[in-house]
Length: 527
Image 1 (spheres, one colour):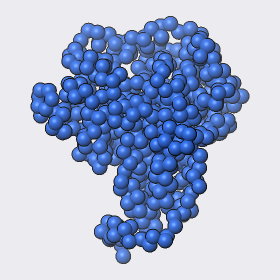
Image 2 (image 1 turned 180 degrees about the horizontal axis):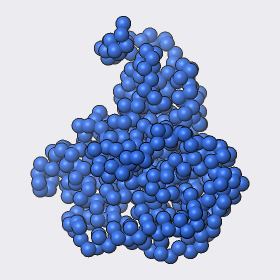
Image 3 (image 1 turned 60 degrees about the vertical axis):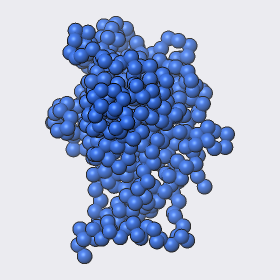
Image 4 (image 1 turned 90 degrees about the vertical axis):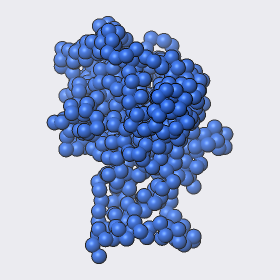
């Protein structure tokens, strides 16, 4: 029997075989806590576990820890579980048995932020107003993951419309931090961060406009990469600001981040900005991951991003220790001192307020295509879903609803105020490049966010997101250790465009020497 015929027969027979499997067949249990994509790949290749078993174990953990349990309120990271995940896993297991392994992600369950289109699951942006939105096609990121053999096991909560960092939405509610369930998980990709930290999946995708990948990585003791604008396609992803948004991975290790990058980056005709990726995508991002990769590197300590408030000193201490550890591993560090021109440009380059309505309406025109009709009919034109419809519906979490209503009928683009923000972006990009050239630097380092995760219901400053977020340059957040209160802290490395291989190499060397990644106690292994 040919391999192709066998796969065709599987498509016809597998649903029946799954339904008629003997009830007495006890599943093999594998403790997935602390395991990343690279670890699961080894187990799958050795046939020590199947993808069906992995999916079953991650679903068990979602069932156990998503909602309230024991004395904990529950993580509340998931908006939608994929009801076909086990079936997809079974198909991929058969492919593996027949000798067809698509790559390192074959049969690996993953989660994605619920602003990424999935043809078979709703894409809600965390909003009750969009609960019925079912795109006809996958986003490019999701399509590439599936083509690589990954299983989308669930879609995760986000701060509604990706508008803040505490991850609360009208549809998904409040996501909580597995390291302290009375605290925020970061955001806006806090659902992905909390889900990966709690071992609901070994890794996942988020999006970053100004810190939305890196802050959840810091608060959840994960590695998070904001790629260079243009490296990863945004097609089929609900936008916050088109000139700032980019998707990227959150995972327990740099190696896992590299594996997800290998599957998802590169040119996509659906997103013209990815033309810039041509010639900048290596054969594999794994190639440079060596334990000595920090030796001889020069890192500039961006001292302006170390906070001065009492609440920021615990983070400062952890990141200062991380810098000392990088130095001990062979890096030279340079204290940069005040950079007022950079801070000024960064304070003036945020384009979210200008671009949100334009870019969201363009996304909805394709992904919603006039559905749901009840929402489209609230405001003219009656056959299109727009930001105005969402605002009129009122079905948005209150703090976001006020912003949504204020941003309807935003000034048309271009306009002089917007053009000035783009000019400030250029000054920021040039200033970073000049600073790094002057000191012959491979990266800048600073706290990912100046405070540990704050209690639910409180606010938190996050201006450290600006250098990367507003310039479009890449930045990698790494687990740097814990405060005395047991809260994770992230150290961020920022580089010039398309220097992801260098950032990942440095991050890998650091994590392999320090081993700061520790799973949270509130979501332990299941028996």
